[in-house]
Length: 180
Image (cartoon, rainbow, N blue to C red; front, top):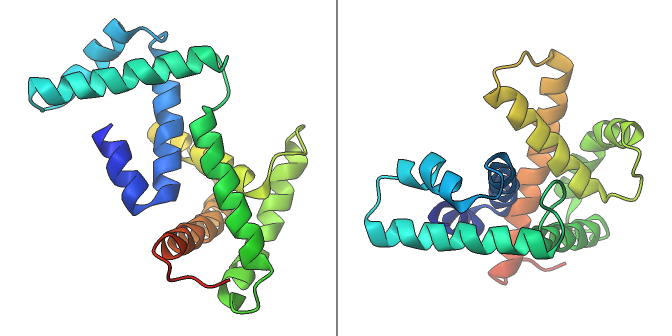
């Protein structure tokens, strides 16, 4: 919870990737709060009160996942809402003549997005979600210590640049510093 809160306030892209990881951690622990306490929460070097807040947070996420029918797969609506917000901002940035750097970064990333979308049977997924899915898959490969090709490294570097820039624009807009 504390990590998610900090990430949400500092980097919306990292926040979303972290929340997807939390969803997967809940699934990996069978949506069982006792297993989550043992395998995750007890590992934190925090006072009992903070651990209880973290446990409550996980318990609430478990309930949300059950209510939304995503115990096995999918993303929480709160995380989908972040994708919707970022997609909306992305589309507005692409239409803005003041955002030539963002537009150029997007067009440098577009061949990788097209390639990824061609491999995905669901063609209705927004481009930004495609980028996040690719980044999440890449991070999982790194965590697993799997070999990553130079081509994939290059694609992820470009996608990361786009998502980083989008996250910066998101916070500029939140602060009232972005005029589109």
